[in-house]
Amino acid sequence: MENRVIIEKVGHIAIVKMNRPNKMNALDIDMFDALIEAGESLNADASVRAVVLTGEGKAFCAGLDLSMFSLDGNSAMTATPLEERTHGTCNKWQKAVWVWRELQVPVIAAVHGVVFGGGFQIMLGADIKFAEANTKMSIMEMKWGIIPDMGGPQLMRLSAREDIIRELTYTNRVFSGAEAVEYGFATHVSESPLEDAIKLAKEIASKSPSAVVKAKKLFNAVSDLSMEEGLMMESVEQAEILGKKNQMESVFAGMQKREGNFENYRDTI
Image (cartoon, rainbow, N blue to C red):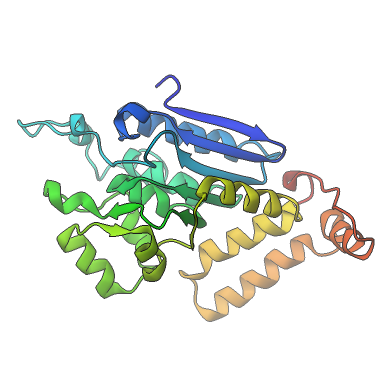
């Protein structure tokens, strides 16, 4: 697992790179473990206010390493029953995606090259996605006789039309980064995804971290809430930050036309 994932901190942002470039960052057991460990370590670090997730080398992530399969059916994927919840609501394979969804601060994916199968699902765990126009993406699992089961179906439905999701899943058709934006899977086409993702992460990190964390919490929850529950959650979360130091600092910084001097979100909420 050594160096499977590299984390570089720049101020209040963390740049996370899958680091298996000779295998196009394909997902083996060590990569799964490293992704989970990286996400959990960042979630424990309240000084981090935004995360950029990318891949080293010529690809974001080519999906499952073929070593994860076995001709006798006894693969690494089935060593532990998939139904066993080893990581909260998830199994290990799902947690490698869901850890980015659960991260309290925004995650921005910068993708390029190929984004296949499990790599596509990892991208979906991010809040915002920058992709090169010619990036090759695929819900690749059908090629190997399996279904997307790393949390992707739970996230795809929040991004794209159901018929698009079904077509791409049933056929494992390769589509471009530009098409991904058109479908709703990605946010922006970019000539320099990593550069643009870092720029946006710095902008997000300049805002009140208390408000940003609360906003992500609200957006993560709202699709599963009734209208009444959603309205109540807005009020509850707002009440926890209104009038507190970071919220007041936002007001003063705006009035004085200066950068905000914010405390870490766990110190104020």
